Image 1 (cartoon, rainbow, N blue to C red):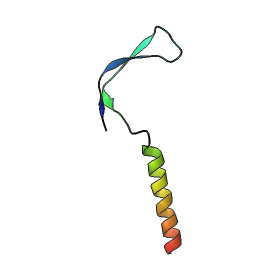
Image 2 (image 1 turned 45 degrees about the horizontal axis):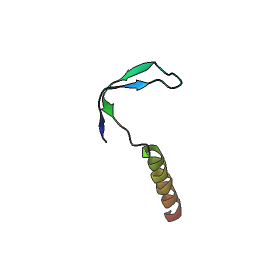
Image 3 (image 1 turned 60 degrees about the vertical axis):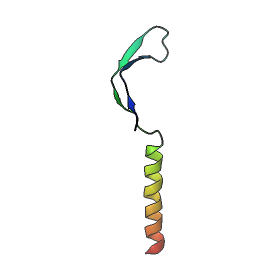
Image 4 (image 1 turned 45 degrees about the vertical axis):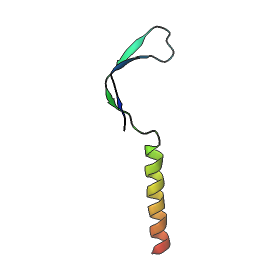
Length: 50
């Protein structure tokens, strides 16, 4: 996952206010649906085999 440096970000719905964002790791946006799909696939496989 790529590292995000500290920067300033505009607040939504505001023209002039900003907020400081600390450096962090950017999470993959497709991570949660992928985990759900893998779990459902394993459950379906277990039901079909047993």
